[in-house]
Length: 447
Image 1 (cartoon, rainbow, N blue to C red):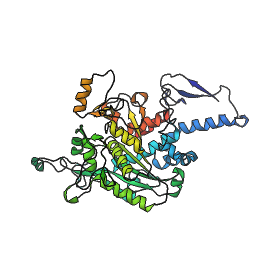
Image 2: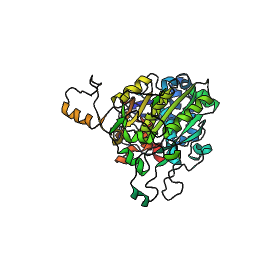
Image 3: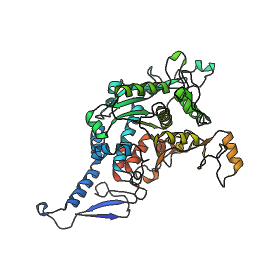
Image 4: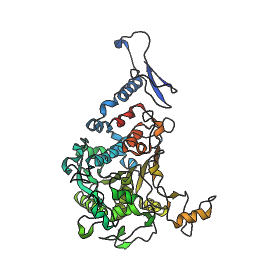
């Protein structure tokens, strides 16, 4: 047997032993003469390469979660967890994509997937917009077995939009103000803690589902951070308001800080803070980390959550792994995230329009007068954008993928490019900018 690297050819037949990659194809070629296996003498390198190739061919057998998670184990992960958690801003890990980092991104993506799977989408159900499953076995009921994590708290988001009186005549699902948006989970399995190198806490958020959440998404103008909310001042540190002048998207902040009258439901911000405080007290003295992950609207909420938790608990390592997220804040908000040490890894599909909204991005620093000056760009246009409060900034590091690199997606539409499964498929397949896809990645499209 010999291993060769070839340039792309037309798609092989299902019976072929060729592994397809758009710009990088690995094939195996059998010698024409019959051989006796007993007389074959492989070098160690050849034997290891053959075993690796066999694993790639048989990856379809690992579609269920119970098999998938054990395959991610690596002795390097625990020793280098801070690096994979973004301590060095993922330098040297994104292109080519490090296998351990790929596994971690997919692992957190599956937590987000369980929020979608557990959400009651049926508006005729009395349980609409709540979780379909109890906390104790939510992960298992969603098909996520042997994770080593347990869900400790359900999280709800509340819209702050004031509804007109005529809405009372509409179906109840139209005016649903508060809904199940995610959960907090804590790693409790000793072997998993050892593998990860610390006790990890996960906050996972879904994307937009309810009518009022859609309306909040369209409130694209920026608002000052922080602002007062019904229960306590948002983003307050040591009882003093942060006068940084940073701004974030109005609708996202509303969903994070709003609560219903008479405290029927606390704000998402208060729920998160209380649960993180409880966890820190429970596991006092242990090495903990917080990973906040989300898709679409959930990616925006993840960024706000990370900033808020890091503000309240500065000693806790906080990282965001987001999928298909919109922009959240202005250049000042980005600087605040960087200053406090919050690490953000954004997974972006170039064909996903949601990642290009809201607002406009001018890539440079702040001017002395607080404005954004971009050389060569008409100043009057910049001025109008600033007055409309639509100057946004990208935050953190970016892993940029592209639907067109996958030979399995075909003609994709706007919705398909934004789906979480598409993101997991692209992460699983991405190798590097010069060899962007591997053949085993089609498995996520079969869920």
